[in-house]
Image 1 (spheres, rainbow over the protein chains, first blue to last red):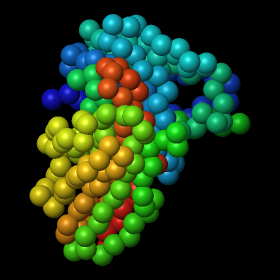
Image 2 (image 1 turned 180 degrees about the horizontal axis):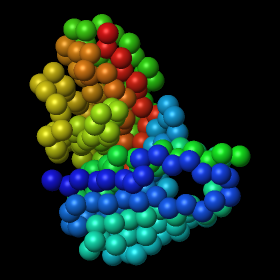
Image 3 (image 1 turned 30 degrees about the vertical axis):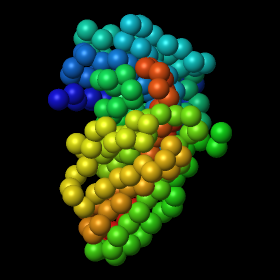
Length: 112
Length: 114
């Protein structure tokens, strides 16, 4: 059974810092990995999707990498801002059709 | 498109009552998913549909839970009878038919069973 773990569970940083969120999964047979952002009381917003054949994806200040063989992904946030404060979730898709298995999440707080 | 629309946003009900959650997926999306989020278990897939047909309901916790998708633009998740342990946030998501397309989530329904 696929299990997805995220470390750390919570992270607090001052504004401007670069930071890395980690995601690990137990079964490397995945089609893709997706990073989401969840604001309190809100739904999930997709940030980046990395296909299994890809190594990384970038969007603005965000960069996500994938090492499928070792079961790891990282989300790099450059020059963090208070508006980045949210919970970040990674999820893997074993089938390619978004039947997602979610990680435990990292709660990020960026202080001004 | 307005995105995935869920209703109601909040629902408080008494134990034993029937609860119906509603979802309107993004137009043109072929897949619809129901997830449940709790502090203890995180986000879990309950059931998903492809072209209105239920494909995998192995995540539905008990027979008290049922889901339908009568047409491409509407789905319901029903709990009957509801119990306090059903309290959670229920999300609906939809995605297109191509592999490796992003999932779009609704705002969720926060259900409290007292």
